[in-house]
Image: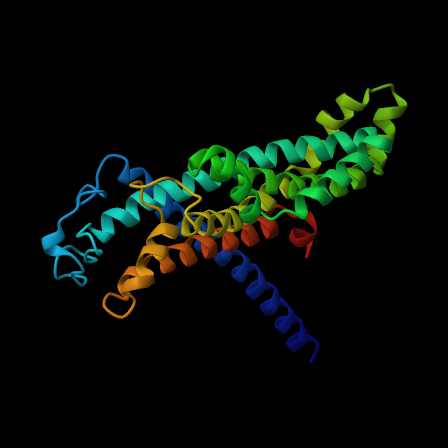
Length: 287
């Protein structure tokens, strides 16, 4: 019985490791394919994404082109490829900016504590009260819709997310013995933050960034759906969904294909984030 139980435990452990590796590998493969398509669209698409051929409008998949055409006769595959670059570039840029500013703020608040920490938390509360869609609407009123508006709205919303996580993890690091020893030998707070705190929380920041990229893709699609994303004729997945509403009965593929692209991107980033968390978290590794 003991041997059976040990074999069962070992088997469940291998299954858990396998499932974690599957998440990481599957997420990396999905995101790798999307990035490849996005980069390929910069140099080649089956047809120019903005080229209109009214005579071939609303053609089903395989009738004209691999994935058919939209209401203006534009090639859907070409638009999906170009939209992949536009959506990913906006999301990655916004998360990179928001993650950097938020992480710096959180690490600084953990080092300084006191009024700076309290002020940062209040600013985060204010930003959380204004979701990115509403922020983009306000920015659009002043700046007009476009790439800059979408990136700014998403990045501003990402700052408090990263700030709260890095603050919490940094405070845990500051309570460790190695930080106490570093303070005892006279290291400054800046030195401790860079040499001891940041290396021990960087894995959490990476995992959070991967997961937030999925949310950024959804947010960018929502902004484009509302007309607050990149300006036409640049194709985006969200605008393709918005344009397809009138033709759902005649051409359902116009809504299904960009919807599947958004879902695939979000799934890929979430799986990649889960896999990275299991890989980089020492507690998961020890288990």
